[in-house]
Length: 248
Ligand code: PTJ
Image (cartoon, rainbow, N blue to C red):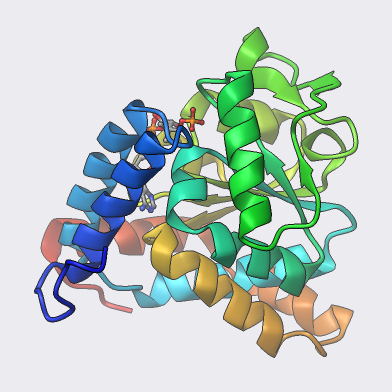
């Protein structure tokens, strides 16, 4: 990372790629995570590699949902752990959420490596290793969750998620916040709050909003949640990708 010059026009993209590579080398990120990153990077290029206004509104709504929640959980996979470990810990601290490792390609080694990595970045407790409950209507490995974590959560943040699991969580009637650069992928399509933004920008922005709203009362938080329009957010992101402009 230190070797990438900061004035390089694609600096952030190069840093991101490097973090995913390092994650694979450390046994945190699955090899498929590199393909996922490549797809994300292409969409980010088309979005102009910036947080568009509708994404910022989604990030504020996500902060309000997390603050209102009784049992908020932030789900962590191999890409999330490699890209934003300390940022996820900061978001958990700002909102009182739990962190839970939940993997598509689940192995005991990667689970442990990710939990250790999060602790190295300041996490106290990491859930997901217990796996004493399962998400209904999803094949066995991917459905494993903690009974007192994702299973019991009322609000879940699922970044860079696979469509099947996003749908299964949606069927459990949880409030689902998804971060995904592809607005057409199934996870943002089923999310209550689809955030079409790079996770590198999205997570610190949700945390900033959560800190700014720390003293807000319940009515104010509810108003932010209600004001947010998921269809409009998805349309604005698609419009930006297709035309390079937004009319918001
Ligand atoms: O660690 P595991 O085993 O749980 O596996 C994780 C991956 C990401 C490999 C797995 O969930 C997967 O294959 O996901 P998909 O189906 O490729 O979906 C990932 C989505 O995240 C795609 O729609 C990408 O566009 C998007 N994406 C990739 N990088 C970013 C991103 N969205 C936001 N920020 C990114 N940096």
